[in-house]
Length: 369
Image 1 (cartoon, rainbow, N blue to C red):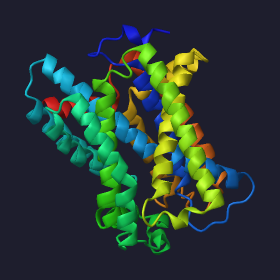
Image 2 (image 1 turned 180 degrees about the vertical axis):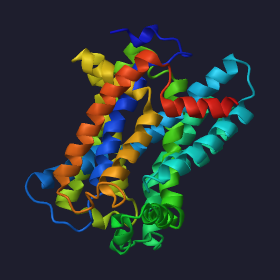
Image 3 (image 1 turned 135 degrees about the vertical axis):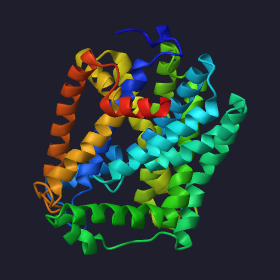
Image 4 (image 1 turned 90 degrees about the vertical axis):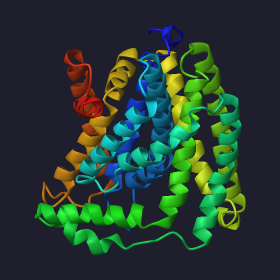
């Protein structure tokens, strides 16, 4: 395995591509398992899958936010080296990413690309921040994540909806009804939900900043540094998870959550645990053929994410194969694993012939046109 210490900052960093590929497994597993209708009692293996989804797959949007921030600063360095105008180029890229996100929302109501495109614009405010100053600023913001979440929930700013009312639209054989389902649910859950607009976007933005810091402090550019940080963060996150589990077991989180959402902090620790474990797996050289395949897969993150959602649209909706929302949880998980394996295989073939994934090429072509 090529040492990450040999990779210049201007080139792709293998371990980051691997993390992108690894996180995408969490994305497809979480998204597909969340298709199951709410309220179904989990029994047998489904009960354990629900726990695994909550721990490893649910927080993937935090990991994606971190990796987006890393990619942002990587782009900034590239634009600087090419002496391009940073702000116009970046705004153009985010505009096209937003439109790609609208396209993706046709297939999946939980699209996150639009959020990244809009929130990413605010990162331009931090271009001239000195990195140590940015670190202190980001640490301060991180402390407020559970506080803001608690305030929004206690103030009644979280809108709950009975998605069963929309289920007939999803099960309809008319693709226009399915389209209405996706955009109605997107609007209710993301656009008209104050908790999502404030708390989730705040947390998302903070992890954009952590991603920027990881690039500026070259966490992934030098193998020795990557190993050190991975071990420290693995231990810290493991301790954090254990402490919060202990508090929940002995005292119950409900006593504390009104003031400081410990379950939000727990979700953050889950994400850190997964990312640091992924780094250690990659650096261990364990089953290098598999890690290499996942790394290649991670180079097509945008394309694979959109194709995952296209597949779910045609498999689960009434306009497609109508598998619906009432399958056992293990069925959704099995389909997610199958789709992921197929995508890893196809990505390996694709990247032997092309430098970019199809949607990466479209995005770059539109942005540079």
